[in-house]
Length: 130
Image 1 (cartoon, rainbow, N blue to C red):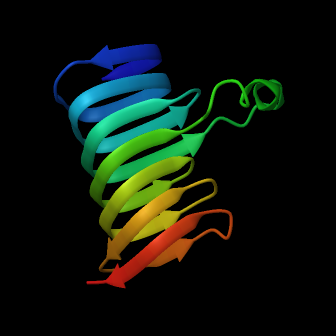
Image 2 (cartoon, rainbow, N blue to C red):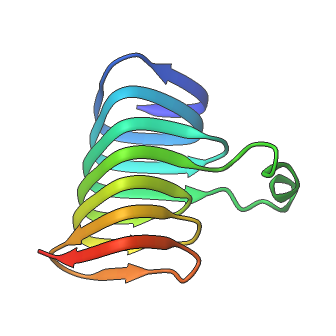
Image 3 (cartoon, one colour):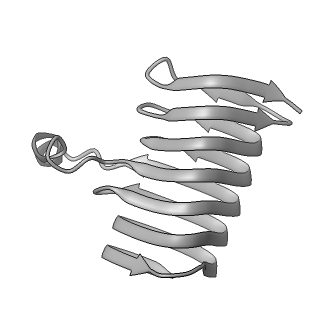
């Protein structure tokens, strides 16, 4: 599944590969083997699950002028996967094997079983090796 622009999904979204460039709202679970999200606006999903999950904020210089009007943020309750790499994400819980928290994240709890890395530009309230 490819999202270019804006999408609203009333229930769950399941796919082998989920790629998004833009903004989306998923009222239920986003579940895919590979999830690749480039944030161009505010996005939301109740829960996110997958093997490889990557969330990145858009970096073009023109967009930096506009981003104060349109927050580049992903909001979710739970992210669960094997390899997780996040930017611009707000989540209550992130659970995975290898977890990399990049810039502009607000995370309540990170649970990891492999490697864990956190940017000084992000806030993680608690992290646990499980």
